[in-house]
Image (tube, rainbow, N blue to C red; front, side, top):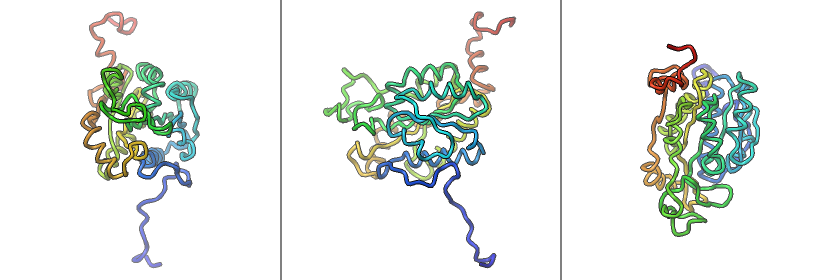
Length: 278
């Protein structure tokens, strides 16, 4: 083939993504997000140093798809396992890949405490407002009046309470360095999501503290919708309740890391200052 007619390769499978067929439901955004994570691992050149943690739920299958080392954690315990790995091997790039039922329900304690301790890990959080793998039950992120298998008349906030806005909740904690909420409903959104995922990993590599990317997602199977209709429902209902954007970025606020930002916020508290400081 002559140089004039040679094809230019512009799109290929990331090396960090194994050459296997994924088993997610048709239209499920998990496949998109997993590819984005793999692309970022490739671009940062850290596949060999990366350790992923996959808990229970649809996210558990992540260990079948990534080429890096993977660990399966008990339901909700991915942040605890990731903490252990990162503390023993601080030079590794450690990430947890979790769904909303896992992260915000049984794993909420691990999530909050890992974040407030400023564990230098990255969390990829898929928020599809429902329990996916286990049958479509109401999740902590299910919207008010949303119909699920365990809220057939819609989520009643008088008895079930209000949904948890995880990104906003964690952004109030001192150990957090970077949090952004994104979605992957169209090409422009996918590009923004990849940028956020890359920044979260770069935050960890720089040692700045806890980082998380929340991906507002869909579950066509348990929502009982086509993929197209589920994305439209997500845009109409979920995005107003879970607005996209950066929720916390200590570097953008002028600090080197989460610890420095926390110290500044505690400037008026003498006991919170470093020992020996005047």
